[in-house]
Length: 225
Image (cartoon, rainbow, N blue to C red):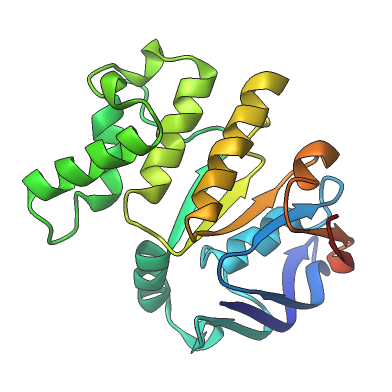
């Protein structure tokens, strides 16, 4: 499903090369649940951005479902991203003065799908997250846990193969955070490949594998018991 070969990402900082990732080799199979851990600045989010086709690698090769992403132009990468990948972010990235339904519909509004089908898909996603009854509420009327459910519903409304979550529990209390991971885990059991970046070792241990990154390199890649 996901294959990275000798992938590096270099940024220019004060005229010097800074390696956010260095010679990363990684394979994630279809349907796996993988957690990615490391200190701040270790390269976790950069890795997620490259897997999610949000950033270009500096060298190496990235294959997604057998397609060479590293040789694609931005427009093609965007099409791949919209078709195959859903994102769940720490800050939810929701439009607060709009309804829950509108936020979940948003990824499909510019597709060729009819408005009726877009709405139906969005309502199905909300039902999957147990918040169909919140569809007409504005985002600013919701609790943190409800907002995260909306963010997950929006991420899965396009029926992606891969779900990438960057610190999805970072702004939640421990109980709500564990409930969020349980929801993501259930989606993984339905066949979605799940990659979660987290600082929390308890959450990391819920994955099948835990990858640890330090200074842009993968230092451990372990199966969880």
